[in-house]
Image (cartoon, rainbow over the protein chains, first blue to last red):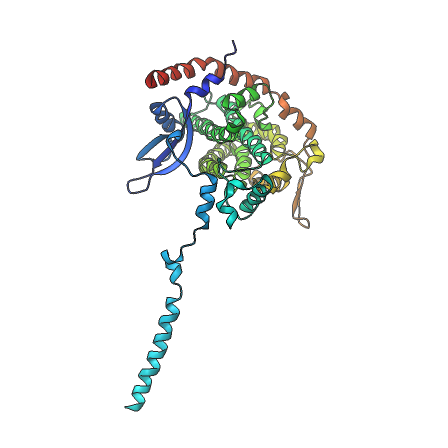
Length: 115
Length: 324
């Protein structure tokens, strides 16, 4: 009584599971599972993966509802170099401040002498 | 640089080069990324074998759930069996995502298991006749598994690495559980000590085999080189076996166990363990589906898969009714 196994594809969908460890922590992707609907996905997520570790919230999302980046889009992200948006783009500031301080000290010493 | 923006127009050779550069830089490959066919095949083989081994590995321990000596031991071994099943679920999902472009799914994995095309770890083909065996499995078989899983935490395939991270966290509980079982027997009566020793004698060869042969000379076949090239793993079978011996032989001696190999010694000059090789023909025989408990456990797995088919179907009807 071998049945057509393709049928199982039709109703088991991929769900992505997210959880929040404690109040104040961000919701985080954990893993995926197969389930026929959202309610079962939640039950299976709890049963399979939250027997031990703490969780204050669990989300399940049908994978087909997630728009992910294609590889070419991900590659394009890597190319972006925007130092002007980051502190490391301003790494020369300390050196420049130092130069002013050095100069200031000389000026001050010079003033002392002249007085 | 310009190639990155136009990844889609690269030819296969350029994509392969780009792929190798990525893994050599330590980047992680994700399920939807381009990957060479033999990388995908290597992952499917490795991860479906690992996932199924978790599930088949719960069976010898499960036999001890109804017979555990105390309520606390029963709860702990039950928790462990659940964990192993959970690890199997986690890993089979990772394997399924890799198989999807080939038009395959979990059912193919299960059918391959039942027809013995898909292999599982040699240790899970073996009988566990006493509580001493349950202790040795929990301490040493899990100990061996932890070493090889930890080695792969930094694998080039992102989803596998993330699953392993989670698995290794739970394994640290298993390691303590195993130590606790073994120490109780080692502290016990002569009869209990003897039970533990006999279990060690039964498991020793299987434990050495667990890591696989040193090279393909022993079994005529090995995937280790490819798996290292693709950064799926970082150590050879023999390196792992040496680590295992270094970690456990002194502890075994400390609690009064005899190592069932009179020739074993640590060679200070070579800085390695010299030991008696297990019978690799026996290993081949076992993993190809002819171990002492292979058929019984496969039959258990298969009958439960078939008997629960109605549940999977019933759930499917709820889903289509809700959508319709």
